[in-house]
Image (cartoon, rainbow, N blue to C red; front, top):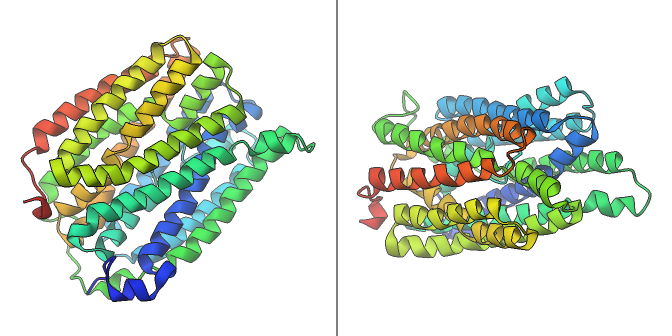
Length: 410
């Protein structure tokens, strides 16, 4: 029988239970993504890349991640999740070590495509579908949304602290360390986090220990609803790609002259607000349902982003962006839980991957478009387009899935 969050096995193993180990690995990974998302445009500019090339690097990273995640989706029902998560941690180590040695545009593109660098504050990576399937197996159905809320909370808090750690290069400058050397050191730290994450992943039970029958194909009876979700989620991701955290940081640097330290502090509080919205989302979903929670928190956050793009002062823009942060991620645990709830257990890895891949592919298209708009002087337009497209997505999602209830909501 799978362990649940309240099972004796989980309690006996304490902080190092499989569920806690999964949370810890997620936290380490998101801590690394938190500072990389802020430092990536700074590092790329320091080695001579222009704004458009930075957008291309972000697109390349998202595209490579999408292709790897797609492969995992079609093979996930045949391979051991723990083994692949440990291997992905090894790729994270290689990425960090290679990135801080990459000084040419071509080398940066290669590492971005093949590695795990994440230019977004969201979790677009090879790790996500495997973690979702593993977590869903380890908890009871009624505890699933709360478990995903805790999983998202841990990741978001870690990402917030990671954004704060992006102040590191400025602090090291006070001790005579050059900006470029400090940035390279942060990518070395990213590699160390990959090693630690692999240790925690090693405590997750093997997939074949679950006793689940292995299906002949990745998706079976749930194929239709998974493809419908994937199509809609891709619209949301394409919109989100216009405002990935690296591009948001670049916009704040160029429009308002925000310092790296101030940007790190802002993204820290932004991440904290996002993190504490996850338990609220779990509470709200029990009262109005998961789909309604996704939609009715998303729309106001998109309006805040549009307004932030056009207000004239830094204070007003940051205030609106913080309100957006408190609302924009409340769909994350509810969406993950909804996907896992409406498919059969053997389909979960494939469903998580196939709903993530179109998101990754769609999100890979928009940063380069945003970079082109930035280069052309239309710096506000990426965020206006992001907000408008997300609002359209929310109405489409409500129309398509408002009558579909997971078993625990019926």
